[in-house]
Length: 166
Image (cartoon, rainbow, N blue to C red; front, side, top):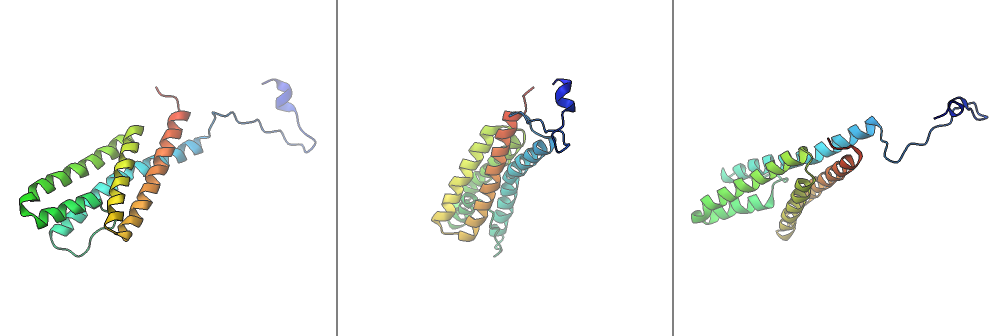
């Protein structure tokens, strides 16, 4: 930039603002995107943890069941209770599903965009299961979680576009 532009003042006495380049972003905006990314990725941990808690509560006969549980793990717990021969297989499948969500949370936090996409798709399929069984309270929480996961994924995609990789 030449010195003329640095000292030029309009009639109002203000120094004109330089146009921000298309690929420039403020540190505050980067921090906001990073926060959205982490919040979205952490939903995978919350889903796995609350689903595990809900499964345990179902098994001990509690009437309190978390609304933000995976419909698939809840379904497997009920299968295991109704068909005792399937109990071990249902428990193993539930643990595997929970493990997948923990892994997706870890990978999403590390910046793997594919993990975010796979997690959102899997959670969307689980949401459809809740729609099928007409659990509208759980469906509302699934919609909220999906919203924050999608916001997190979008933030990660923006971060990957803006920040050069090492």
